[in-house]
Image 1 (cartoon, rainbow, N blue to C red):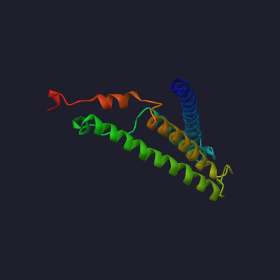
Image 2 (cartoon, rainbow, N blue to C red; image 1 turned 45 degrees about the vertical axis):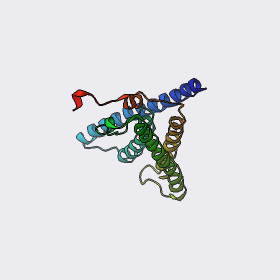
Image 3 (tube, rainbow, N blue to C red; image 1 turned 90 degrees about the horizontal axis):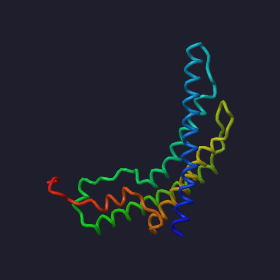
Image 4 (cartoon, one colour; image 1 turned 120 degrees about the vertical axis):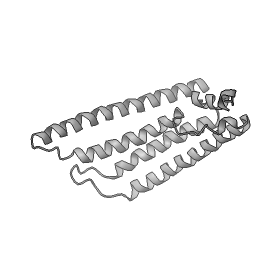
Length: 171
């Protein structure tokens, strides 16, 4: 079961990474086109609004990838002096905090989607779609955090953190 779960997670996150790559390519092309247009006295009217939506989308979609790969900031300068049990406790504590943040993202993202009725001025797209990505990201973060808490998924950096020890060179 663990192997099937890891394969499913890998597939979903590969799709998310692919979407983020496509968004980045589109953003670079659009901004380049906007710069060229401005050099010739023109303007792409929808550029700023679309870039806002895409940047927000990419930022929130990259958050679960950071949780999956343990790319968040971990202060190891003092933690390497802690016993193994304290390190394990710190990992569980950080996962519980991430779980709470994920639940808040889902709850408040859905709340903001429900309450937001405005539309973007130029494109006419509903602003609630900005918050849809927050809910999707929160769900992906929630699944990944639960998997880590129950030991269904491990990141290499977590194992390295647990294995770190104080050496003579550190003194």
